[in-house]
Image (cartoon, rainbow, N blue to C red):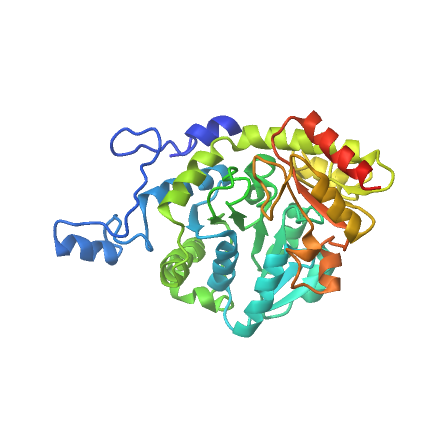
Length: 412
């Protein structure tokens, strides 16, 4: 049962869960299987005629507690946790699409997602990329095979922002679900289901976990989309469940059969990590804003951050993201060599490929995250040979500013 409260209170009390032995946190059910007193009981569980857990690949109480918490934050009808963010995106697409289906997606996606969509081509699921997700671009790309529109709320690292109400209006007119990856925004900045999105995915390895200690992903179903089962044949077996069809297909087919479940320990670490999401994101956004404004004063680098007046998505971000700019900024150093020199000169930022950690992380995306992407794909994602991406942490902002400004200056 959800309770009505503000964000930080909801993080701790929103799902109002009670655990068996009065624990204040869910116990870690670090087991593969669950014992029953009789074969009749276990048969009912497998036949979905009785509540219970049988095998952790199918369900686990620690995973269930984490799913309930994130579902409460996003306002969905149910959530399914996964082994990684990529598993979450993959499972979402495969639950809706079959061979011959098409997806419409923004071109400036995270490199791993672009690689995934190319891999899905081998299964007969094709992606039609739009430079930006706008009414005009989406309507031009829709065909009778289109099964979903996919976008990132804040693209990583180009920092484009989706106008969710406008895009969802277009997709719903066409009878197509709108799937959003809200990893970089988090429920602290925005709750996409309230604005018209149908399905939300997260890489929980990032801001939701926060500590950089557990890989995971999660899918939240808004439960409001009216599925056309003649068109969405991948869901036809679940027609009798109506608006719950996607969630039940996802859990009983894709999640169970493909085996992409989250580990119980990772679910526990992510459960405890997300309880400080509001505090962390407030500090991270404050730090990122201060760092971006300090770096903008350095005339020989080009800074990209959403709260800067010069940013093309500044006004939309103000309206959509509660006045915050998120935890990612990037800048162009002028050359790959100088980008490397700046990165290597930093004292506090860790050179690592994750984002959303409490520590500041820095990377050269062109030589790492986008190493398999072509030049056009990279540039559409805001990645150039001289781009430096920064995932800002919770350190003292003055230390970060001094560190980055010094690194920029000594690189000249």
